[in-house]
Image (cartoon, rainbow, N blue to C red; front, side, top):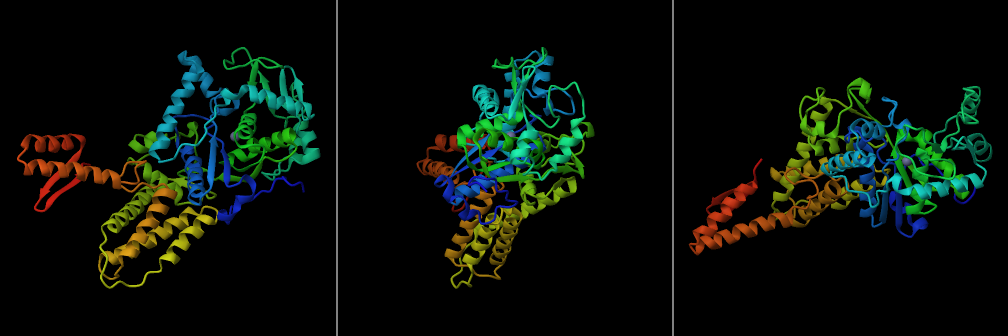
Amino acid sequence: MRENDLVIYNSLSRVKQRFVPLTEGRVGMYVCGPTVYGDGHLGHARPAITFDVVARYLRYLGYKVRYVRNITDVGHLEHDADEGEDKIAKKARLEQLEPMEVVQHYLTRYHRAMDRLNVLPPDIEPHASGHIIEQIEYVKKILDAGYAYESEGSVYFDVPKFNAEHGYGRLSGRNIDELLSATRELDGQSEKRNAADFALWKKASPEHIMHWPSPWSEGFPGWHLECSTMSEKYLGRVFDIHGGGMDLKFPHHECEIAQSVAHNGADAVRYWMHNNMITINGQKMGKSLGNFITLDEFFTGSHPLLAQAYSPMTIRFFILQAHYRGTVDFSNEALQAAEKALGRLNDGYRRLQALKPAAEADALDLKAIEAKLQEAMDDDFNTPLVIAGLFDICSTVNKANDGTLKLSAADIEGLRRLVDTYMCDILGIVPEGAAAGQADMEPFEKAVDFVLEMRSQAKKNKDWATSDLIRDRLAAIGFDVKDTKDGWEWSVKK
Ligand code: ZN
């Protein structure tokens, strides 16, 4: 085995120790971005949330992370099997828009939905259309290495040759010999030598509106190529994690492996990670099935299959209740159960913030509680176990709240730190009442209290105009302020 030969891990145990030797403390992570823009649909939520948690946890461990997630925007025909025409090209043609207007339209909606799900943006979000020159250079090198051939203005990867020398299908475990012989007889008209060969560069047909000049034809790059090219550009020839949905394992990721081995002579990726798929009421999602629900429709409850609206945090929590390698089935019953469970977690969070220390405290093994949470994350990002650990903390808090357990100030502080770290920072679940992206409410609360302190000062000075102005402005912004006998109470109006 060569030094950089592909090692496929089905799980990432011992995450904490794993990445040091390769990139001096910086973890390079590449995740395939959305392949069909839709309007930010449910299928986009799972990979985004899965790899958001991976990046958050690696950063918590002290790694620097460079997280790259691409934008597929060069108009590939194969992307919208339901409609048989590339989505971007079709919308641009029908509505007489620039293709990039269509891309931007979907991208903005996608980003907005990701923000609401509290998915942090990647560090680099490269567009395939912005890397045409790099992709052409990449194709030239594969041609020079003898693993591709030109045919009628298009360039195809020579899968049988690559398979004979390096083995094709290692990641997905497909029986490629079978695939190659089964497809050999097919369709004598094809430009391809073998039906398993895939396009590195495709000559554009006259109706294809997105095309660029190249040494072979006016055309566009093959889909698989953008990921090999852009991951190398931003993460180097060998990088740590390549992620994506399980549906991308074959052929997309298999093709990426073949391209980088043909281009560099070695594998580019150390660890492949694939999130499992989402079903709705036990069915795959698809436009023809009428269950293609956008994230906005979940947030507003405006799809006929939905019994109610579900908050972004309910969706996030529901997805994280399953391990990323397990399937997730969306149904109203399951989402309502998740909403209730998340409500209990929020209650626990609030009670923990209000908990008062006891003078004579019972013993609490904080280290054991922390070790359990850490081990869960360290064992292949086991988020359901982390959530179970958070519920254990909730029951401890409930006991302290009803007086059956007495906690010291240090233990209460320790529990708050663990919940802030694992619930808010790592799982990215924003406690109820806090807006997404504002998990840390303390400065905000202090600011409101400061304004109310100024109001009380104004009242003391009989400056009624200022005092009324502050009360009215806070009410207009959305605060409920009540005067109490020793000061004030405020809350955010629902
Ligand atoms: Zn990709």
